[in-house]
Every structure is written in C-alpha cells, then in structure tokens.
Image 1 (spheres, rainbow, N blue to C red):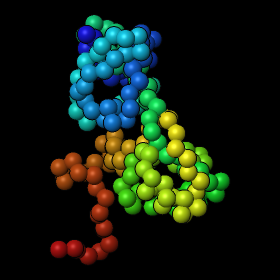
Image 2 (image 1 turned 180 degrees about the vertical axis):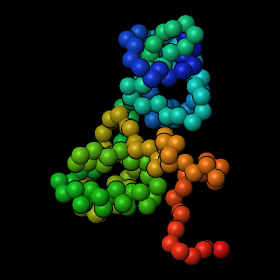
Image 3 (image 1 turned 180 degrees about the horizontal axis):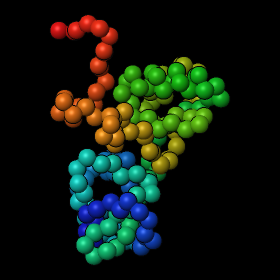
Length: 166
C-alpha cells in the first residue's frame, strides 16, 4: 500500500490519479484506490482540504494528483448575476456548501433546496459533476488577517470610533 503523507507546493509529474468526492477530500486520514488500482493510505496534517489538482506524495516518492470525483449535485443557472447573488444569499443563509461559477451555483443534490432555488427564479438540474465548494471566509487566512491578541481568532469586530464598548 502506498502512503501519502504530504501535499506538494510545487509541480511534479504525477504517477497516478486519485479521484475523490468532496466529503473524502475534507478528511485528513483515509484509504482509497488510485486510478491504476493501487491502494493508498492518506495521512495528512489536520486542517486542510484537498482540491482538484493538488499533488500528494509520501516516503516512497510516488506523486499522485487529486481530482474532484463527479458526485450528485444540483446546478442552478440564471443569466442575471443579481439573481445568482439572490440564490447564493438564500443558500448561504442555510449554510449550504456552495460552488460558484460565472453563471451558475452548484450544491449537493437536495430536492428541498432545488424547489427553493427554482422558486426564486433560477433553473435547476441535477447532474453528476465535480464539486469544489468555496472555502470559509477564514480558510487559509493570511497572517495579516489573524489577530494575535485574540489567540488567533480572525479579527472581524473592532470598532475604533472614539468610545468604548464595555
């Protein structure tokens, strides 16, 4: 079994492909099968999400490219960007993981959400497609965005306007 223990930050020619659904790409420890049939054990540092195109390697030097596997999703379309924003707003209000394209929104297939989005005026269809939802607002935050005096919690509520909030 091939062990994959680190994500590469520069390109190497991959020896194999590892197609994974988003749920698996959120995990740091799992077993899977490469496109060529070889088994892998993935053990990565906590806190990251694998994205399509990421390169993994391990002690034996084998380089594997991660691909977002097709999975059951709903894709909503509208030619008016404002209507897409309205759809994204309502899906975000429900804490739905969302992938945003130029003229479409994609989320995990869910008939209740489909009805809501269609009710707003978007066209929705179900398909099997790679799912690469947006990361959270503070995913991969740069050091400048992390407030040291709050113990690493992103600073999003400082008001410096002449009076105190006790």
